[in-house]
Amino acid sequence: MRLTVLTENTANRRGMLAEHGFSVLVEACGKRILFDTGQSDVFLKNARAMGISLENLDAVAFSHGHYDHCGGLKSLIGEGPLPPVWFGKGALERKLCEEKDGSLRDIGIPWLPEDRASFRENGGLAEIFAGVFLAAGIPKLADFEGVPPLFVRSSDGKLLHDEMQDEQLLCVVEGDRLHVVAGCCHMGAVSCLRHAVSLFPGKKLGMVLAGMHLRGASAARIDATIRAIEELDPDCLVPVHCTGIMAIAQMKLALKDRCKLAEAGKVLETDGGKHH
Image (cartoon, rainbow, N blue to C red; front, side, top):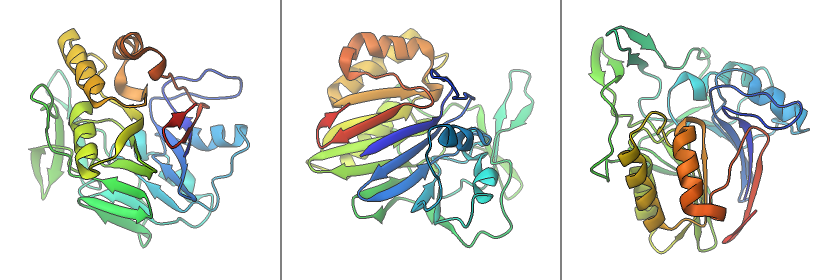
């Protein structure tokens, strides 16, 4: 499996751009899957800077329906006909975030095409290609986690707490390894990984590339997350995007060489249990 980070909050090489967002090109099981598109055309510009074509994609999948993961869809349409585009069930609803003053800020998908013939909806576990899965409907599996109440969705004119059931993980089975790519882990990184592992019994957790929504989290929450991840024993952990600099630093200290840093332009590869 080969992962190319196209959009991330940071960049660390000449010609690469950064923005608050996430996008990664996943090449696995003979398929090319674009997982998220960031919030603008930055993912396209970075792909071009790396000499990577985003034509002839086999699928596009969105981790959830927030602007910093889906906003680049409009730019992608300009590249040619869309392949199947996978959303978790409920991702297209209006999504909002409650600010400190009580006002609501729109954080949903900023633009959608009129022609949605290529759209696919996933409400659970979908095998989109042999060995490549999308897992939505993530349950709370750690008592210190859960979706914060500030996330809101509008359904049939009513404002409800958004439990982020549209969030989906990209899971790749490679030999005896299970690799997981996650956009934000709103339910919690531990819940997401425990859920993924439960879906594929007998598979060892391989590479985990994930935004973990720990920016601004308490030291206790970060410590509990790291302890639980250590118990899950991934071959490699790559924290990105919304994980936050404090959590990333603590993860690097705890997992040492098993924790890798990734900015826009980073390429990660696996071969069964090996990674580099």
